[in-house]
Length: 128
Image 1: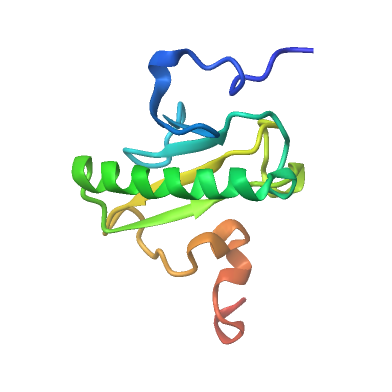
Image 2: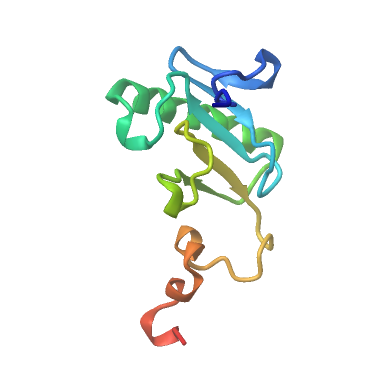
């Protein structure tokens, strides 16, 4: 079985950290500045995190936002976690995506994370 890519991060990949979590730039970014916030302890989904780990991740997300606000000046953010294969999870070490969003980066951003199922992102009256 291959080792977990998030358990064997090179130190130079880490852009921010605290005792329980690290932040790295996503290797396949959705937008410039896309960051992953990763607990140090290996476990697969958000639901296995301890309260302390969730707080550490939250605190690091706030630090990431300050860094990205300064470096990229985004107009908004998407923050999300994929839990399980049917939700798109492909790395079995819990991580949070912090994705800077910019006005015009997509034609119709309405729906945000609801766009994972585009036919349901519209209001019922707008659905095909």
